[in-house]
Image 1: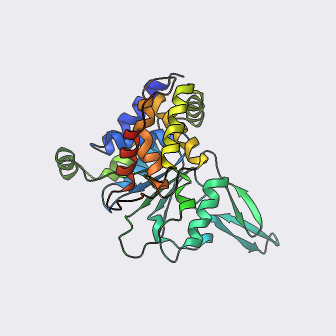
Image 2: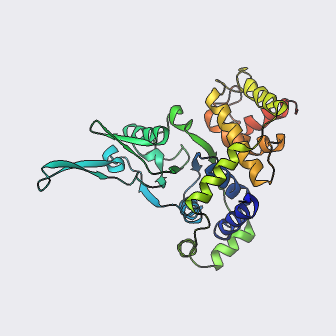
Image 3: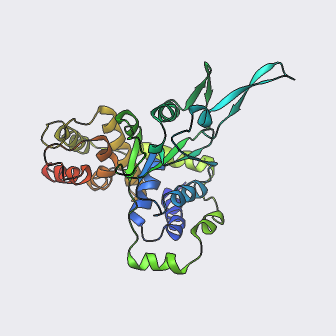
Length: 306
């Protein structure tokens, strides 16, 4: 299967719904093709939920949405075992986590206990309920949305949980032309409902295999290691990247290369995904007024290209 036409049609369809945000849409597609979970952090009302729903529809995946709230229990997510008299046994009733795409809306409003139940699902691709483990569908993606931390009633995600997201993106406000389209047009959700799936399960699996097969030459891997080493010097960040974060960066860069129509990773691919893939795993050192994304960009400029 030629990846290029397929990927182009995915991007085109998504860009008809999420107007004027081509870079963010491309990041989302790269994240799912790399088999990673996605965190969308932004203020309410900019289209986070619409984007998640559109991704699930376009990728042809079964979708489920959970609104995270302070009183959401782990069992509300994973499901419960209920005693059925007719069968004289406990029968497991799966919760909404048993979907191929789980939209965890406003994930930072849930208690740490519920967040850790989701963490197990993301990491192990299974859930444990009353001592029994249940496998989740394949593929399994979490698209989580969260409002910025300065909002009331939010529990900051622990670092271990943030590390499970391959990418964190922010959509941002639309530009004037895109906003005019939104103001004059119909409801975006109606557009999403009329979207057709463009991939079969086999085609998605095939694209994901093609991502893994993208070549990374030694000089490119040296460059990635130089970037990882720069995060660990203490000059830019309080703590450096883990090896797992380095692997995530390479996977995201491979997906970016495939989207760009190449079978090898170029330094441009690494730079294109760098802030989205590593900034949420790092805490800036020194000048706290500069956010993690700006700090990543400044650090990247100090690392020579291969």
